[in-house]
Amino acid sequence: SLAYDQVVPVRAADVQLHQAYFACLSDPECNVATEFPNGYTIPNAFLQWPAQGNVDEGQALYLAPFVDYNSDGQYDPADGDHPCILGDMALYTIFNDKAGPHQVTGGAPIGIEVHMMPFAYTGTQALDQTVFVHYTIINRGTQTLTDFRISNFADFDLGCGDDDIIGTDVRRSMVYVANGDPLDENCLGNDGYGAQPPAFGMVVLKGPL
Image (cartoon, rainbow, N blue to C red):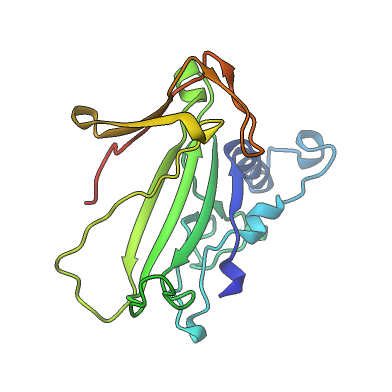
């Protein structure tokens, strides 16, 4: 569905402000006009959050995770509901292999649906340079899958990709990319990092349940 052809960004600070506003509304001792003198506007991302699907179109009722503030089983930010995210900022998107024909493999669609949430924290230097990605993989098809593999596709381009080197650190479950020499030049319309280019690694922190 084109309705889900999007990536929704949500900040933890916006979630906290949303929680504070509705907590104030429900607290007789909290003066909304004082606590929120400029009023409060629900972030557009909360309205776009793909919390529930259209069951009439064969979609699951519950999709992206959310906090049901009034416990009515329906996602409505105007009732205090809000996205449930990881990290200080997160992105959320849903995709599946039935979105279109498998033009490369020619295979039949399976019905695998992937919920992907990249998220990040701020604080330490290491966290500032790290992006985590959480996947939820659901079999929406009719086949029982008994022998399958899960993998990540990475097209590493570290600045100018012409002189990159790729390696594997098996003990750390890591693949990494580094520049092949001490100077990363511009190439193919991409800006290089120049002198002392960085390296980048991708680690599987936790496999499937």
